[in-house]
Image (cartoon, rainbow, N blue to C red; front, side, top):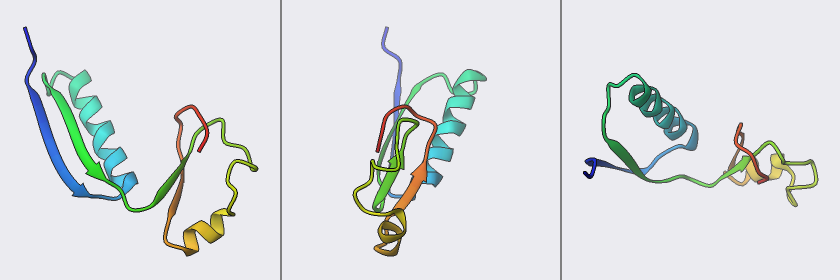
Amino acid sequence: MTRPLEVLELGTRDYLDTLALQRDIRLARIAGKICHDVLLVVEHPSVYTLGRATRASSLSTPTAELEAAGAAVVEIERGGDV
């Protein structure tokens, strides 16, 4: 049996807003409020995500310069590097 899939086409959306939506969907699935898979189709404005393995030397450009150029720099709890 195949579960239904809901596709949400979000267009361009802020990374942190989308992360909050993903977390809300996850909690709804756990609580049994959503019983189907959800696929988010989204593009973020320029963003660098820094995982737990990120070191000061991981970025070749300082954070302040990236942000001044319009890119967001976000520390996130996922594993990995930039």
